[in-house]
Length: 117
Image (cartoon, rainbow, N blue to C red):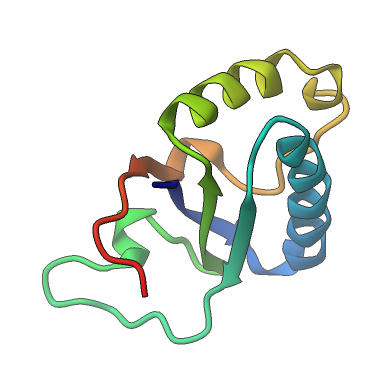
C-alpha cells in the first residue's frame, strides 16, 4: 500500500507564481527519488473555525493564503530513503531553492491510507 505525506502551509498571496514554480522545481527532484505523485492546492474556500481552523493551524497572517498539499510514495521506506537523498541533492541547496513561504509555520506528517476509492 502507498504512503501519503501531507502538508499545510501559509504562502504570501503575492507569491503564488513563485510557489507554483517552487513546487514544479521540487516535484522533478522528488520524482527522481521515488515520489509517485504530488498535489498542490491553493486555498479558495478556507473558513474560520469556532475552535480551530486551517488558518489558525498555520498562524495565517493578512495577505497570506493557506496551501494544502500531499505526495504519495510507494511505501514509508521509499519515502524515508527518498527524503534522505533529496536532502543530500545539490539541487536542494538553499542558494538554489528559494522557499516562498515561512517553513516554520508549515505543518506536515506521514500517513498510512486506510480508505482509498
